[in-house]
Length: 82
Image 1 (cartoon, rainbow, N blue to C red):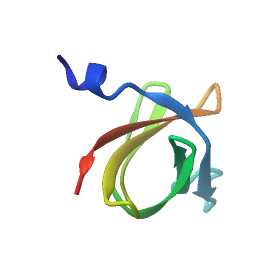
Image 2: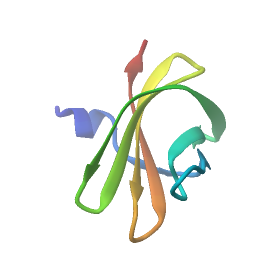
Image 3: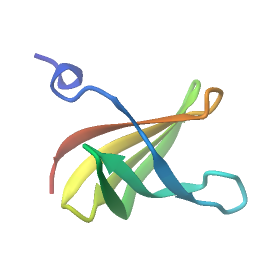
Image 4: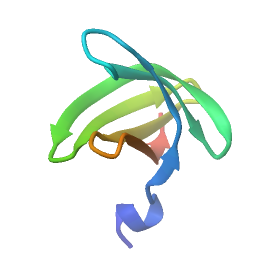
């Protein structure tokens, strides 16, 4: 079974720090109806249509969050704990 099958993307709501651009980096997001604050942004990168963030949450989990820039929608995927 692939990582995608184990950890499917889920739509989410994300609060962002706005800097020189509108959604500079996430500061919190919803996962399973609970708000998780971003402790650290571990990595960020751009792919066609998406801006990705790999983050560590205050719950100790590592997540990928992606923003579909044209649809202005967010998705989250749990990767693993610590």
